[in-house]
Image 1 (cartoon, one colour):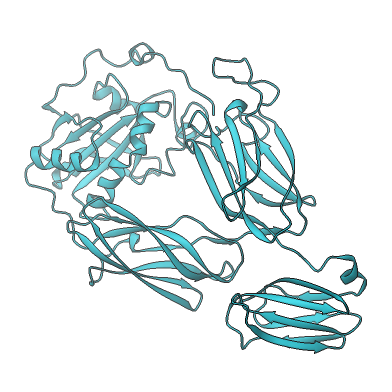
Image 2 (image 1 turned 90 degrees about the horizontal axis):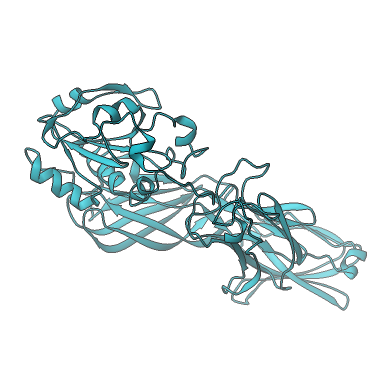
Length: 486
């Protein structure tokens, strides 16, 4: 990823006074609008008895980004902001007059996308930085309802709570039985199956969470989950759960109870599940296209099978001489194509990408955006999309699969066909001569068997949803493949 070299702040921003505003000063009032057009008045918040935290940062500032990534301020916003007890107001202030909306959204002189990952208001107003006379980024201030300002520093979430409780009148109250559920996009190797995926639960309440209950809903299918835990304020736990999911249906996760009672009502109690089924290659020969950024020597990648074995890998690529980090060169901002032969076994594959500098594959001004794409017979079957600043690695499970088909010469000559697959229970099978079809569940039990003359529609609606193995025998030739019943 592109590195941003910084000069000393005081020389770059001469508009800022040499002395920072003194602790205990009356906080300079302001009324301004955030990037979404909402108005914020400091005095109005203080009059309402709220504590205000100002995080004055700059988009290009690595320490600012690193502090943001700790999640401390986001945790305070979730627990004590409008969704929680509504006792604290968090405001991000972009304090550099030379940067704005484009940089906040991750383009140009920036270390990342600040907007999509900041849950509290963002204000692009360098006048506030000037009024508060900051001398470095980030500067984090605490303003109690009494109106006096103090530099708070880059504290963690529990330290912020202690800081407010020790210095502002009264203590933060919070709310009870309050948690947030988070689920990343779920990628299925096959659609309409029971699959494992991770659910993260974060306690934002003022009491310990010992029991969590939620429902996973996929269309009319409901899987109820109960988990024991022990979570204090801001603590979190990731549960691996197993539930039925189908990308063709609406999927969601609802938090039903905490400690056996209804949770505090917030938008964090429910989340839509983004479910996708991986696309398949019917051939073992694929192409992996790697779209490099301006630092190709930092880039490596792996393709792993279901057991975690690396079946293909690439990089690092040739460095350039544009700077001391290896920018530029013939492998920068280009496409590196790798021909890969997969093992001849049906399974799903994981794609994992790495950056040796631990700042991801950066957005560029080139003709392509960095990432990885997999092609089978000229068709794209997987793409990471634009990856950006992912740190040192990012993994995409169930990225794509290899599925055998009835494609050998004998079956082609005999005109065998079977569709649709996946099916809701009605399965069309045909050939230009008689054949035997046998269907087995994954425990090896034969659940269907029939001799068919030429063609027929099979009624499999009596079988449960799931994955089956279908064996077709034509003369002396047999072939087995997966059948998915939704």
